[in-house]
Image (cartoon, rainbow, N blue to C red; front, top):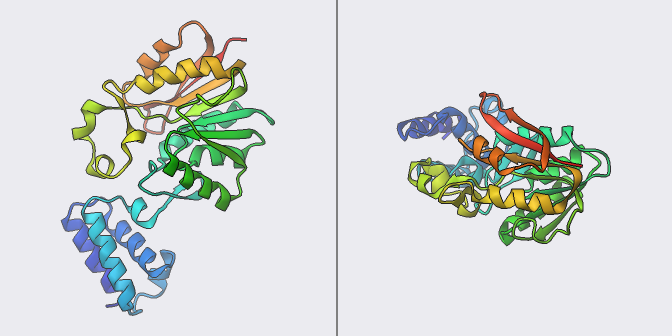
Length: 276
C-alpha cells in the first residue's frame, strides 16, 4: 500500500461516510499515522506504508467515520498561529475565538492583571501571555482541563498562573484590569440539534450553560463587577442570539459597550468597561 493509494482509499471511505473535507481529513490522518507533515505525502507518493502505519491510519479513519473530531484523533489544534494540544477534556479552540483574543489585546496595557475564566486548553490565556506583557491568570472548574492547559503553557513557554476554580470565585475583589471568557453558552434544549462531533465528543461542562444558555453569562457579569478594578474591561464570546440578553445584564455599571462581529458578520464578542 503506497501513500498515494492510501490517500485515495481513505478519501473514498470518508466521502462515502459524508465526512466534511474528506481529502484534507485523509491527508491529516495519514500524516499523523506516519508522524510526518502533510507535504511529505506529496514528496513521497510511492513510498510503501509500514504495517504499523497502515494499522494506525485505518484506526484513525474508523474513529473519524464514527464521528470523533480530527483534532481529538491527532490531539492538535492550531490557534493564533500556534499548535495546542487538545484532548476530550477540553473544548476544541475555534478560529472565531481569535476575535476575542484580538479584542482583548487591543484593550490591554503592559503590566495589566488579566484573567481567563474557563480556560480549557489554555488557548486564550497562553496567547495573551505570549502576545502581551500582561500578568495572566487562568481558571477552570475541570481539573483534567487544567492539566491540558498547564502542559500547553509549559510547551509554549508561556507564563500563566492556573487555578482550579468555579468561575472567578478564587480571585480577590477589585484586583483585575481585564476579565475574558469564552463560556459555555449552549442551551440544554439544543443538545439534540448539535453536530455529533460536538454533542458526543466535546465536554458537556464546556458546552452547556443550563436551560437557556445564559446562566453562565449572568454569573460572569456579577463576578466581573466584583473582581475588576474601576475602568477594567470585561470581554466575552457571544453565543447564538445571546447579544441582546447579555447586553441587558450589564445594567448601568458599564461604559464603552461594544459588540464586535466575526468574519461571517455574526456578533461574536462583547466588550465593556467598568465605570471609573
